[in-house]
Amino acid sequence: MSSLLILNGPNLNMLGIRQPEIYGATRLEDVEAACLKHSASLGHTCQFEQTNDEGALVTMIQDARGVHDAIILNAGAYTHTSVALMDAIIAAEVPTIELHISNIHAREEFRHKSYIARAAVGQICGFGTHGYILAIDAASGLFENS
Ligand code: CA2
Image 1: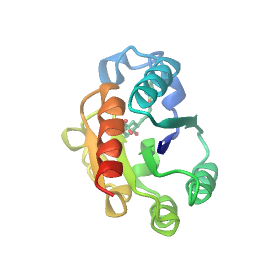
Image 2: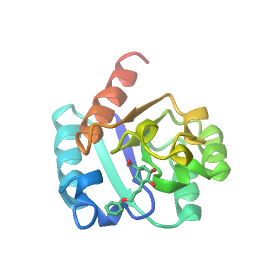
Image 3: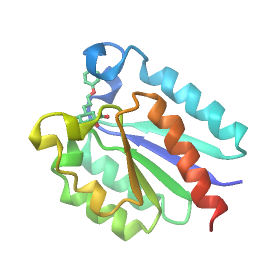
């Protein structure tokens, strides 16, 4: 059994409440339920968190070392700005999958830059909230190959 940590950054608590044309109509609590169910079906445990606080995300990534086998990170807008999150992923040495609901490469130019991408195993974006399920499958593949 492997342990997954799914981290959600700023404003993702608004999922399903505002801007459904970009982020869909599914609420974050429904995404959490689907992630816990899918992880369990693959035999993994899953902790699901959301915070608007960059420092709290850094601490959660640091604390994952030796506790979780993989991190799935939707860092929200911090993706495009945060050297601190990039450094935390590198220091934690926990394989991290970068996740975005929208296709950040098809949006405004400032969203094309990702500091997370430099430290992540890979990136999933543009598949809506189904991306969370795809990311769990990707993490599961990492466990099989390790
Ligand atoms: O597509 C993604 O998952 C993003 O990480 C979402 C971030 C955005 O800044 C990134 O460029 C791409 C924004 C999260 C805000 O989520 C909201 C959801 C519903 C309503 C308002 C904001």
